[in-house]
Length: 320
Image (cartoon, rainbow, N blue to C red; front, side):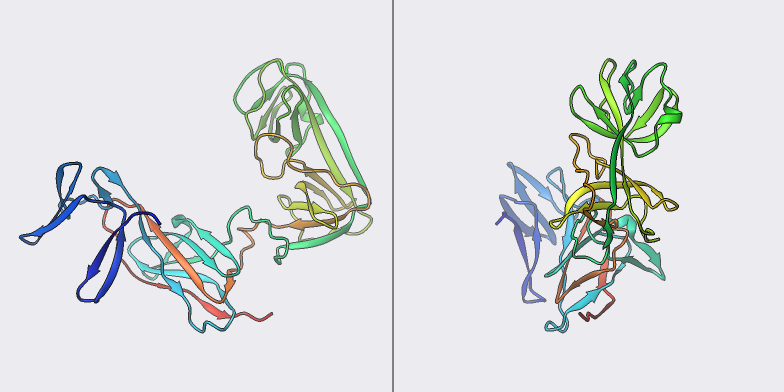
């Protein structure tokens, strides 16, 4: 367990707080509180900079727990703070977790209010945000363009004499065949320049630009969207991210780099006949946190005074 300084509240007859600062000695005198650190004396509550001790800035943290009706499985939908500022919030239940930046909160009638969001990047295929598409009929991976770069600019692919406007689409995968790294085309700047999400190309390196398409012999669900992540197989394997949908011909184009991360290709193309799943963005498709209880970590790193009086959550019974 990490070292902490704890305070005892006489009025509460109990230990009330943990503090990150670790003094060598402390004493109260003439209604003032002094501590000693590194041979120096520090007077507390002496300036308007909060969360700063001995020149080190800290973060205020409060961890309340919602545990009404502990034998009932519940759905926690929202967080409401009776405070003069929003707090970064992490929620954890026995079955799920969520996270809200302070910027997610909206000030409504004097309180800060936010819907509980799941952690971005969650890939739990048991959630309702994962749905099946069906068996893919034909998988095609094609090289749409290739060449050797003639210029170096951060987050760009440049080659004089190219014709990117007619051959490349936003969302295509750029493979640096010199060092094996990959990126995604984010914009077609001109016939000779592409914008890419990872800075992987310098002058003189070779590349290919690929696209993988999945064709189905049935009408695609209207809920399937660009940006959804594809999985396939009996034991779901990451395929990639949907970059285009042709609903007339029932064809999906995917990028084999699933999350825009730089490095090696992180997705694998399925093969004909594989069963295809799609997973919506975990944070955008959030519907709350389910569990018997909810632990809520509130964090605030403000250097000015912040007050927090109460925390609330809209909760209802969860039914299987």
